[in-house]
Image 1 (cartoon, helix red, strand yellow):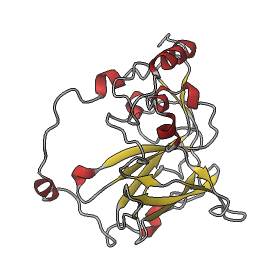
Image 2: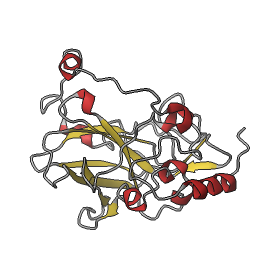
Image 3: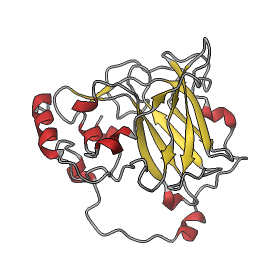
Image 4: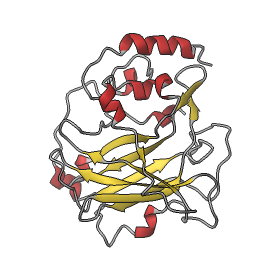
Length: 250
């Protein structure tokens, strides 16, 4: 068992959180596995045309609109707070990025992923796998119907918990242009304690990972609504992960 306490990790976060660039720190000490998993060698150029010869091809004929509703993929209703998450994918000049593949994956309402590595002793929901995808429309808009995920423990330190979040993957024009990030929910008390969230030492950049509750998106007697735009570059860009996903440590 990891005996490093939350108080010790919080002290490390405070000591390491000198305001810096807007990107996540790749060697952020409080996030223990980041020291082992971020790139340490020079990047290699890849030929996107060669990769495209062996990679899947996505388009309107390949992505069914029903894949964007994570609550109807199985034989019954999943447990939890039903919600709609929507927003736009934009470039650095605020222009919409149409017809782009957006994928999501998340824990269920109890904070458990449906994969073998996740040994969190929380129930698996047989009606929720937590994965979905869609294409942005001509205005760059995406929308998912899902269940609000729960927080969950991870093995970074003793009594470590991740804030509730949804993973997003956005593809550009080729598979070499994939970007991965996380969307959080407003007012989460775990923000200050989480070394992954705090690995972005620029407060404004961290804030851009947090969705906004939107009552216009909320559907009467059906679901709450959140809005979160994904800006791909420029000063207001969403911050993307440059190391492997932390769920490998779950």
